[in-house]
Image 1 (cartoon, rainbow, N blue to C red):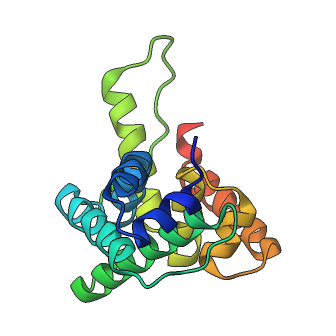
Image 2 (image 1 turned 180 degrees about the vertical axis):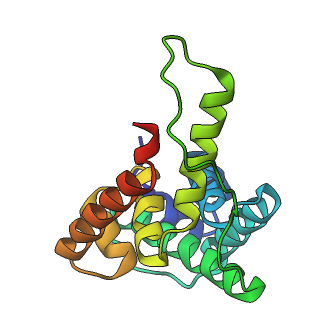
Length: 177
C-alpha cells in the first residue's frame, strides 16, 4: 500500500488517481469524525468536501511519514470549529432523561437501549469543548500522541483530559450502572 504522504506528493503533481485513493481511505473515518463534531449529516458532508478541497488546493506541505493523517484531521477539526462558531452552537443536543434508576432486566429492552444511547449523547453534548475534542479524536481511532499533535497540546494534557472525560461521563451516566 502506498503511504499517504507519497499519495499527497502525487496529488501535488496533478495525479488525480492519487487523490481518489486518499479520498477512498479517508472518506468514511473523516465523515464520522466530522459528524461527531457538528451533529448534522448535511453539515458533515459539506465539511468533508471542504476538507478535501483544502487538501487539493494546499501548497505543497512537507509531511514526514505518518503526518498526513494528523494534518488532515487538523484541517477537519478546524473546519468543524469554524462552522460551529459561525452557527454559535453551544451544544449539539438538549436531551433530558429521567433521573430515576432504571429497572434491571435480563433481556436488553429496546426502549431502555434507546434511552441509554440518548443519555450518552446528551452527556457528550454537555462536555466542555476541550474534553469533547479529545473524545471525538479518540473515537476516530487516534492514539494519544496523534491527538496531542492535532490539538497542539502535550500528551500528558491529553491523558489528563481523557481521565476527566471518563470521570465526568461516569458521573453523568451513573444512573444506568
